[in-house]
Length: 131
Image (cartoon, rainbow, N blue to C red; front, side, top):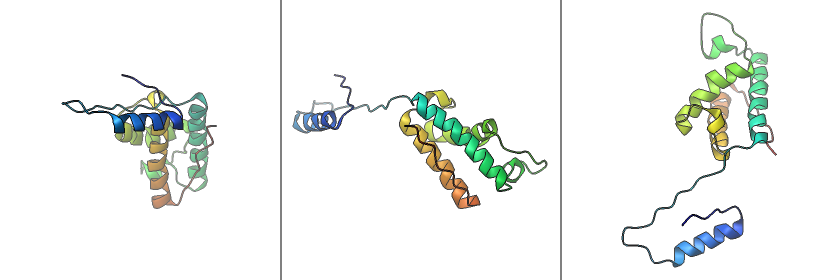
């Protein structure tokens, strides 16, 4: 049986259904998936890349300071995506493509990157609203 749940009523129904069912001899398997990221969330990711690039540059934290020691390289949205976001995304989601991220995964990657930059460099850029 597949059931699409998107409301708190549906969530309650599923909870009640599971609690009241007789478990089959071999147990029960539940697969939880979330929807793919929205177009607004995609736009917000790219706004975040630009905001973070500007903030890092303004703080004097060019790519040399964070990544390469030999040459001063200013940040841009693409370098933030490729050198900061994607390596974390691959570890957190086991996926290389930002187009395959779901709604929850975007937040998970942001949280890891944001925490690292705040702890190591005092940099905090809020994620833009995706609504």
